[in-house]
Length: 297
Length: 97
Image (cartoon, rainbow over all chains, first blue to last red; front, top):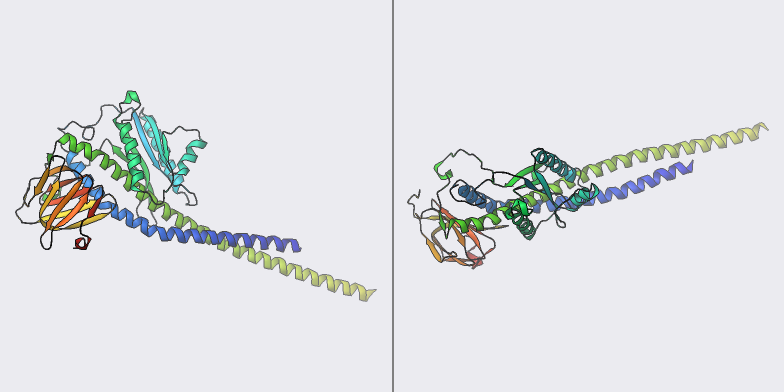
């Protein structure tokens, strides 16, 4: 009988120590998320300025440059997958990987080869476990990405993009990441980085019209300078959004984990009290029974 | 394209942060070909910045110098957007307008 109480006691003790860990992780995620969100906001002006310039350039298609022209045939696509380094973030990495998987199938369906580039140990583990080939992986610091990482990834992708298909280059670059919509909503998203997707937008005011730029020094050189920066800034923006999403997902997952732990502790406490009461009752019955037996003899 | 108001709207952004914005009467920048001065009413330009110093003459106050190490800038309808890889305002006191 005493054994049962001991078992419940052990369960209560281990669940409370788990709850402490969950609580701590929730608080850590909560304290970091503010910073991650402000970094997303801080990167916006740069990304906007570059995107504006790039769209202005892309609309002037008389210049022959990879940025402004679409290859006739896309045979190999690069897919950059952004996941986290650590787990305990609910379905965060899993949903990105699922999205990447369906994108891969879609591209395969279009007859394209797919080459993966990974960010985060979770993606690496997923690909390693399934024996899927990947080109390169970057790990470390997924919850507070540095611009230098974005630059490194950008350089790698751009050099593959500039390599012809025959020499192992890619014709298309996609990013799969998690878009941070709000504290409660983060959703996996796919963007095509290159070739540029021309977004048809209606100009609402005169100032919204994209200007016909003069280039200094030459269009070619300006575009050459613009292209890597555009890619880096898009990758960096995606990394920052992914980091904010990771922290938000972790906070939410840890919140529900510690709530569940609280429920479990309550449940086990009830069971323990029940067992203790049963034991007392049994002891009493035994004493009374014993006394009765003695009196009768 | 250019309206004839006599002020430039200047915005300087770096890769991961916002640097400076404000009204100015003149912006002087260094491109790979040489220096370019921008006054209100300039035609739209998209240019590559060379590493070096930018000078901005705000509407009120002293001239501001900004150190950049590459990037590009665009000018259209009196709006100057300077996009630098890294930018530091020479005189931090004037950074907050």
